[in-house]
Image (cartoon, rainbow, N blue to C red):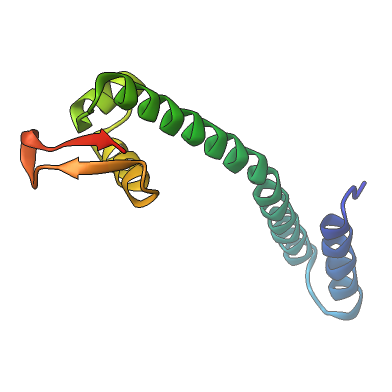
Amino acid sequence: MPQGKYELLAVAVTFFIAMYSPLRALDFAMLALIALAVYRFTEARSAGEGVNAERATQKDANLSRLLSVAQRKGDISNHEVQALLGVSDATATRYLEELEQRGKLSQVGKTGSHVHYRPH
């Protein structure tokens, strides 16, 4: 039985097409499966909004922890961020760049392993 508005719409559209079109039973069944797949996809996307909120919360916690350690130590490197948070090099770089853009950290050094970040 249809539960959501999209599933109800999908069933109604497939029923309408089946009633007014010379489709064979197999074509109707395939059309119904496609409609149901579209419904499930839209439901999964809307359910995924909670996952994004959880990721944002985790990211904020990681940024806060990173900044706290940098303030306590006086500076922090990309490698230290990777070890501290268990993230990849790319994620550590994004975190450091975000805190730099927010004005919380400033980069010392240009490239390579000599780069570290100091809190303001």
